[in-house]
Amino acid sequence: MATDVNVQSLIGPGPPASVKGQMAAMRWAKQNPPKDPKSSFVGKTVIITGSNTGIRLPAATKFATNGASKVILAVRNLSKGEEAKRAIIAETGCKAEVIDILELDMSNWTSVKTFANDVTSRYDEIIIVVLNAGVAPPSYVENERTGYETALQVNILSTAYLAMLLLPSLKSNASKGNPGQLTITGSFASKYVMPADAEVKSGQTLIDKLNDPTAFNAAKTYGLIKLVTQYIRQGLVDDFSKDAQGNTDVFINVACPGYCTTDLGRDFPWYLAMPTKLMQMFVGRTAEQGARELVSATLLGKIGHNQFWSDDILDE
Image (cartoon, rainbow, N blue to C red; front, side, top):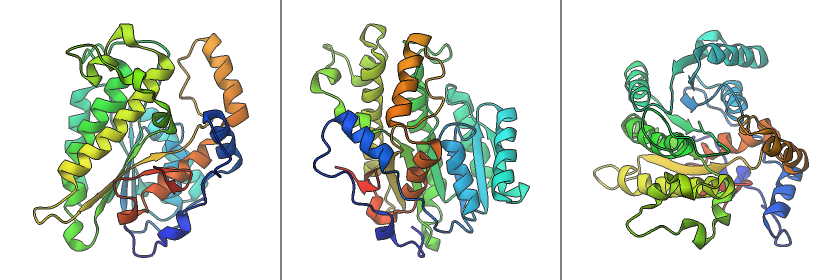
């Protein structure tokens, strides 16, 4: 996307062929964190959802560190957004006006639409969008507003909806030589979904299955949701990434930060929280290391279009 980016410098060797199995891959990933991208984001407006916590906060910090003209923190809780803004300013020394905070509740259709209307009316040139807000509930929880399971609503439905609402703005500056970049956070967990995990009952869709309380399984459902994230990527590429002449005017990809030590499992009961903490100690990257992969994904441009970026490689 940026002319000053040497994309090849972002690409690493990836795991060696001797690394086999999910646990071995996670252990290798911890020992071999992604490269830390240093490319300039000067003149670029960046939106990051859920950016007051997890890997999103260090990602927002990296955009500010590398000169983004505007970093928009899209957060559910405005006071926590203010805390995040202060932390970014303290770490980077950027001016306060570089960081804007807008309210976004991904569990609420109205909030998603209001946010999209607000952000597209306030900012002329949105260049980069990182859709990273997500939850990982340990049990089936129905969203009271929409009737969908919570993770399905936040991680899939609202993410796809928000992407569709923001794409016109991302595409609008392509004629000026600034194709937009949309990056969605995915996971290597999608690679380990077994065919049986995705089987549906007669008359069901995969969305129906993910919304079925009797089919909920924390680990398998998480993998399925990350698989559907790849379907979202493909659908957006097929239907929204080209202009009327067939030229690509927005680059779309999915990035995996790896298994990171964050508060994503904060709602887990103690008997799940304890093994999660042990897993994080054994195979967890830091949140800052995971954030590197999100930031580098936004720099890949044409090479990264319609790709899955994981461990600094375009993963098959």
